[in-house]
Image 1 (cartoon, rainbow over the protein chains, first blue to last red):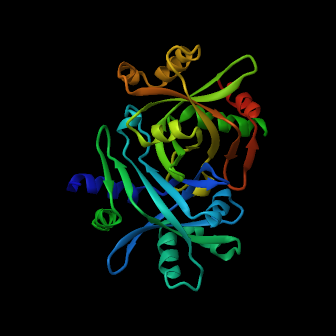
Image 2: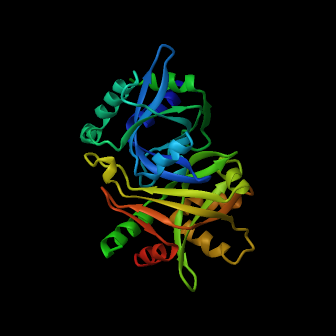
Image 3: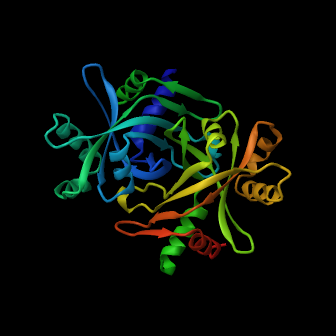
Length: 163
Length: 163
């Protein structure tokens, strides 16, 4: 992936605050919206997404039953731009519920609250959970006939470069 | 569902031109973007979505292998609006490939081209297919703590009212 494409991917991931989340719902595909923050961390850096979800939500029950999910982050629609030209990235992920005593909890919570300061109150409610989504790969479509498949290492490198 | 909520749902479905599509990809959930048009038709009116997809796309192969999908239509992100306040609707659907000789082909194609006039050229290519997505239900989240579950008849009534 060239530097311009990597920068476009980083700007898509850093610039959006909601994604579509595909989950398995009793074996059927389900799609819902989640707020997310992107975090690059670790000795051999990797990208993860962090979200904060209510146990009342269908997607939360789905992720508790099966951690296989897929995120889709799409550029904003824009008048006069054909849909096929909109950058978007599909990210098959494994979802991990992160309990408060986990060493990653505080940094993930801080990253989420930096993106969504208004969400602090939700952390006072008992029925919300912090969930980390670890991409297993990515399919980035930068525009017409501009598709790339990325490894987790490629992804971390592209997004870390934008920090 | 009250009239204001129905109008908000209709405006979301009529106002957006791309959706997230959840499919089953070898048993895993996958999420990708599709352009769509909404069509309400029939003697007992029902809402369907129509899209036009390349056989080279993962979601097309997924729908050929298993017609169970879920659409997610989200309002545009807006500065200062918390994600939880954004209207969005999840629509579990059955996907049906509509061949050119099917009586629904021309009206569906016309509805799609009305929404995406630039897409006419794609209809000249052999590897694109017209696909109708029939919602089996809908989960509409109009904003904070404003969730409704709708039947196909409720959906058709809400969206037809906006034509």
